[in-house]
Image 1 (cartoon, rainbow, N blue to C red):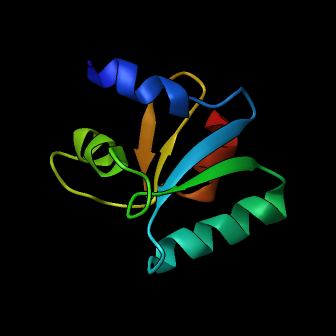
Image 2: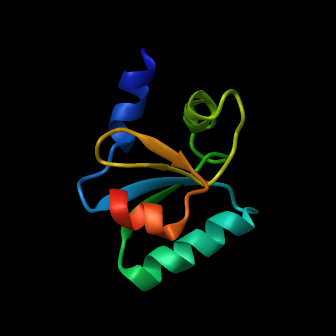
Amino acid sequence: MTETEKLAPYIPEAGSVTMFTTSWCGYCRNLKRLMDAKGIGYTEVNIEDVEGTAELVEAFNGGNQTVPTLIFADGTAATNPRIEEVLERA
């Protein structure tokens, strides 16, 4: 299976994002709080719990499991983005 095929189930609808997280990530908690306040919809995927997602995050981050990594409706990603970027791209 190609990376594109692995990513397909995680590409969100326009106006929403998929957010790859871990349970211990403070940056993830902060970004979720900001997105909630701004009304940005998201689906959270914990890379520690969902098989194969840590590898997807690594593919976007040069082999690193850096979170939060967000996937946008156009299939692009951003790692630890500022809320302004999320608002522009969601």
